[in-house]
Image (cartoon, rainbow, N blue to C red; front, side, top):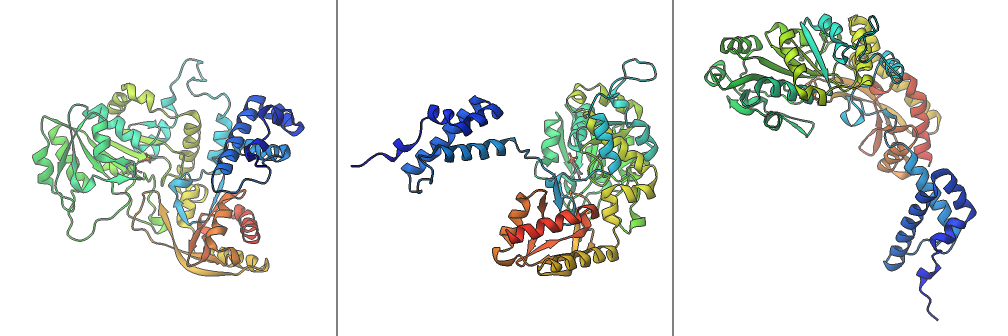
Length: 462
Ligand SMILES: *Cc1c(COP(=O)(O)O)cnc(C)c1O
């Protein structure tokens, strides 16, 4: 006699009556448990209908309870989790760009409760969230005034919309860049309510190109830093001072989108090529925009710098309300800016700056000691000379020589081990190259080394 295997699937009521399921119901709520049971039953039916062999427990309530328990627990597990970044990419956008300094983490923790976000504690009167960080930004950049928004893309939108809606934004064709896949200057300008007026060519733009384009229709002249690529060969661009002169004579503001936003020169750390905010302002930019979580090493934020008159116009734009930062951002940014007041302290305490400046000798020593410990665990490990990357759309040409640990993945193969590392706790992201796992100590906090090595051992042994 043929029986339909579907009839072996217990009913929802039957399963809900099971003791283990009742315990799940107390914890997660009966409705959610019932919905989970239905989802599992649906999959079992599909498996029975299709080619896939039916799961073992088709008729066994205990199997359904175990399955439901695992699914409900997985749903409650946060998907945004701590990651150890062993890739050597300092500003890894997919891993949250800049890791915060301990001081900034503490500030976030403090501000997480009630905080003096919009109250003047001196008078008890209403204050403005826009007042936080302004004094520090003025001191650090020489700007007359400043405004913090949600990110640098928002800063550019706010500046263009406020100063050029319904008019033209003059930009060099060499600066119509795309950053991170979703930020493209032509689209940002149009969505900000302005019209793009391209000047020059991809590789060469001259003062006369700008001069011919600026006029009564011009809202702003926009300069965009080439954050993530370099143009080499037969090239020409207009120096900031010259461009500022052209804008000033035409009576329109020059907006300079710096992108990565350095506060202090990195030359003492042997790195060059990025202008500082102060330099951009000194060269004559009326508004400078930059990110909080690139070379500044703080939280995701957009920073606008310029005259009090222009900043007031930006603050008065209703869009400023939609683009405003939250208290946790302001807390982390303020604490990071305080560190920048002392450049030497900033280089030690702001992780992005410390990682950029990490001496090769130190990295090699750390790699050697990590490799020795991995060998002590019975794994294959050797130190190789490789380069780290700045990443995150900053310093496209920078070379950061590093020493990495190449770890033999054993029988499972490097891709399977890399996957196990990503799914572990803590999650680890590492590079795979030529069949081995590569661990770059530059982006690993020394305090995380122990956890990293343990995770590697477990992932290979699994
Ligand atoms: C990174 C970057 C942006 C976007 O900044 P977000 O803070 O990521 O929004 C805009 N312009 C330039 C030149 C950049 O480098």
